Image (cartoon, rainbow, N blue to C red; front, side, top):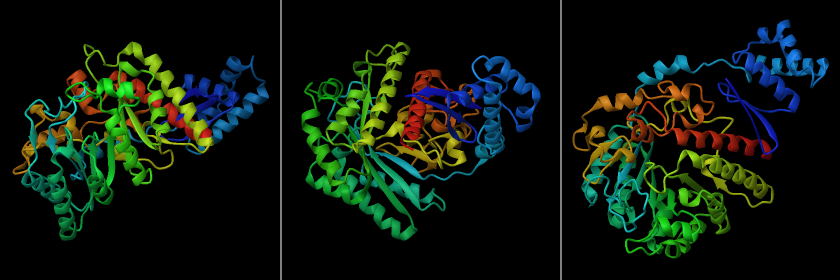
Length: 462
């Protein structure tokens, strides 16, 4: 399977199964396109067949000479022989082994606070309540969660723990106590915890910043962009905006971490389909690590992304990618999470096929110790997997998630981006289609565009 597209003046051909990317001239691009129309599974033998050359000259002979077409075909044959073009699918035969693989839990999202001091209008967590009640995690519940992670992590040494909410800083003392407990357990069990905290910054102060810089491998800072955009969607409960309070704190924290190991993480909605301006606003504030995610909501929500919004969104991604190339060449570059792509290594086969590991390698823990596949399933009782006292009491849920892959989703099988998104968010699939073995269609369209832009940036800067 190959995918061809043009972006910012580059003619790009992606071979899906090898991961190879080719930047071609017009001649080779056109020949590759015609060959792909004839048969997407070419071999060297079929390319060398005389009828192949005849078909090429019949369709492109009016634009190129026969000698030019023959030279282009030889170049394509060389790429195919080298295993970087028209490569057959070698992944689908592995899906059985991936489904049957024994997994260990290596990451946890601790819902340290089901409460929040903001009232974000799009919040899937219902201002921290998660379809339930406001609560703060006790040290005892958090301790049991860390113990569960250690005892279910097998031989894996590096373990990930994200302090999440609601707003984690509303339960800061317990965060500190759990980090201290985790550091003690590291020595006893030959483990290493990588702690992360996701915060809206309202309660951020010098003492918290110092602790975060000492103990947290990463920090996610929630901010939606320009003041008017952020304050419309992320107000306090009295309606007052949060931008003026949190931005100076975030700037100070990012600088104190040498502009590394953090993300400014925003959400764009129908209110700011011109979201490239918000990303550039982040850059102009001095931030170097950023992400803006599309909001996910029902069509009845006034802020939700709709299908008719996609053309403008695609233009914004293209615009942003072009600006990022220009700024990088000027020495003013920054990282945008959705355009970060590894074309040389990338994730292992299991990750490419089955995604984030929710329900198998990654679990979320409520303040009272219930276990769910991830934070977006919390509060949906059909996904309650167990608790930190008894462990996993419904292994069939884990089995269902383990069997979810790009080959269990019909929409993914023919998609060129499937090994970059690994089938997308299972929670979004479930919320829109009632099954994790589907895909959130609007999200898929945006993901494909982001992959195209990310590859173009690599081509432009190589």
